[in-house]
Image (cartoon, rainbow, N blue to C red; front, side):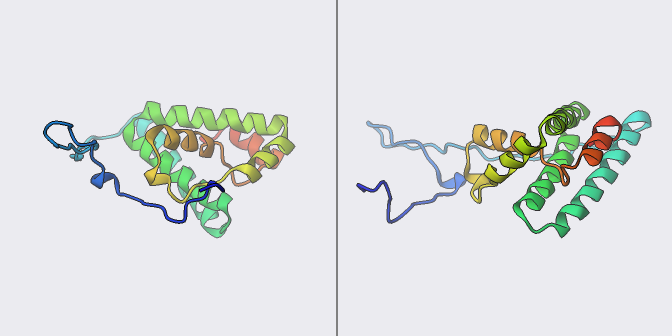
Length: 165
């Protein structure tokens, strides 16, 4: 303990976490309630359908390229593409904000590619992502939204100028 290292770690699943027992009754309550997921049907048309099709093509292209890259960067890009799909399922606004943040980050890459390279070396996707708090997950997601497969100037400039990513 003097070395600030513990020989054992105790991990619990989210479903097993409960409050401390009530001092008088000893009752405990689950910290996380059971999620009820329902699928709502809806139709896309016009501009929304075009946007969905373009985003789907972009996600597929980037995901295929990321699958060929076995590094942490490739995994991060794959994760980001899955995130974009989830955001699109949430709302057009949510995915739009994600894409805008990605564009802003790419513009920063163009301003200082060396700083970007250094930041990529320091970043890591933690193995225990699902066990992190919502705030920690959002922080990591925010970082990963900035991931790109290529930091070269033509790629970033082309993607920032016109297409969704």
